[in-house]
Length: 240
Ligand SMILES: Nc1ncnc2c1ncn2[C@@H]1O[C@H](COP(=O)(O)OP(=O)(O)O)[C@@H](O)[C@H]1O
Ligand SMILES: [Mg+2]
Image 1 (cartoon, protein in one colour):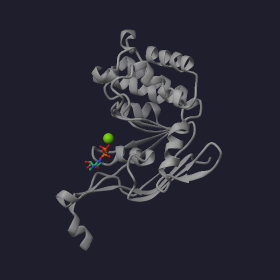
Image 2 (image 1 turned 90 degrees about the vertical axis):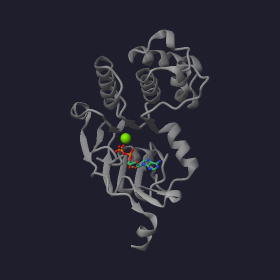
Image 3 (image 1 turned 30 degrees about the horizontal axis):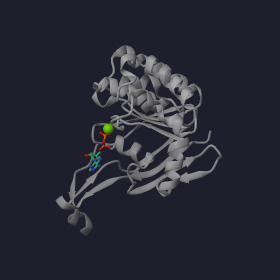
């Protein structure tokens, strides 16, 4: 089976020049993600799990390594080298990200926030909103909140909106960063069922879960990241 995403030797570190520090994040990560399967990233806090997802989505530019992504047409792009334009194109049509926290415009209703990925893709507004309503209902977001901007929502409500937004467009590769961390058990069960449906539809997933129980329920492959290594001084590092 051909991987949709192949990560080879991926490393990320941050240089804090004002403090003269080099902060290591993920180091030498090798893994693959397949269509219709879920690869879970596990490891202690600070191991660089979120950084791997952010590198794939190119929120972060990797320090080293390759991330070979095979698109719907069969073309392979190294996401570590891809242009900003190519990344925007892939984010719109192929790669989705349910981030740990919801970032959105302050005056957009929850319904429009969720419908946005479909609208951006060119779907008719009414159809996009209908699908958004379905998902908000499924994820137990109270109907009285649908017309309200999510800025004032509780953590759990924001996370539901974030999930609905990430799942609405069925990207070919879905990145999930602790998508159920602040949900109640009943809603978590709904999300698990929904992720199983999406997986059966052929979507590839690269996910981080707060609870090992969810890894057991959903993961087809598990990749463990090593604990973080020490922060070093920039100059010391340059000298070595
Ligand atoms: N934008 C950033 N600037 C500086 N350091 C960062 C940044 N993002 C992550 N880090 C550091 O990288 C390391 C790994 O973070 P992260 O990827 O969030 O780990 P995990 O998700 O496994 O807990 C941590 O030491 C963190 O402080
Ligand atoms: Mg994290």
